[in-house]
Image 1 (tube, rainbow, N blue to C red):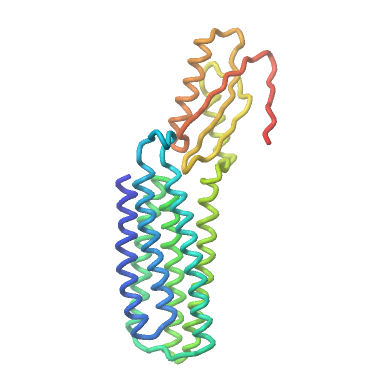
Image 2: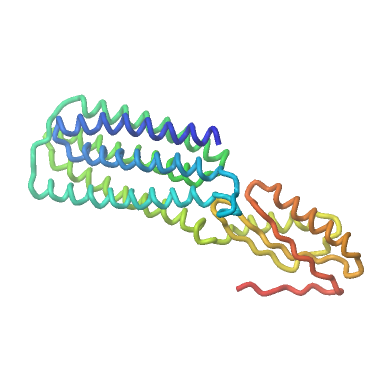
Length: 292
């Protein structure tokens, strides 16, 4: 949790400083591309706050109202980030379209160019650290933040092109760059939302994860085979239901002990939060239950 909180605080502080720098330079030089990028940073501040709160909530212990914990907090945060991202993307496109139709002078100077280069360097550092923490913790909220940091690098590159073109006398490229930014923001919002909806809807994990669950269950001594395996996401972690075959002549206590060992082995997996084991008597043949 400590590293996740650190990464989320970095997002809040970093995006706040970038927003201040972009909005000041954007207003001084009348650059719709830089102002649009500043608005993107403003939503990043809100998103970073939401991510930070979700990380704190997700690590709360289970209670009477949430008996399976609070792990859904992080994908909810990811979905909120996606919605904010999409709204900003549409606003940027509208503002860019108005500038394209109405025209307007864009101030020339080296400061906007230097600013965007600095922004790209800072965002790259934020992306690397957030991705590093995300790979260790498998946090979907931080994954959304990492994707956002990566997208911001590309967005800033588009702004840099627009600013350089404006310096060369091609002011029309400023709103064009802003429109490209808007489209990219919408696309990233869609991707973030799609990834987090699967956690909230209880989507089944990958086939590779099913194989991993099955192999771990079969490795327990006394398990003759598997009848069926069901698994779905509850927040960021997986709940699994495994039907195992045991010798029908075995006494209840021994069969129960085998089931508990399977449960213990599965719940040691980083991806599994809970495992429910059902015992089936082996009568000389395997009967596979059909899945929906």
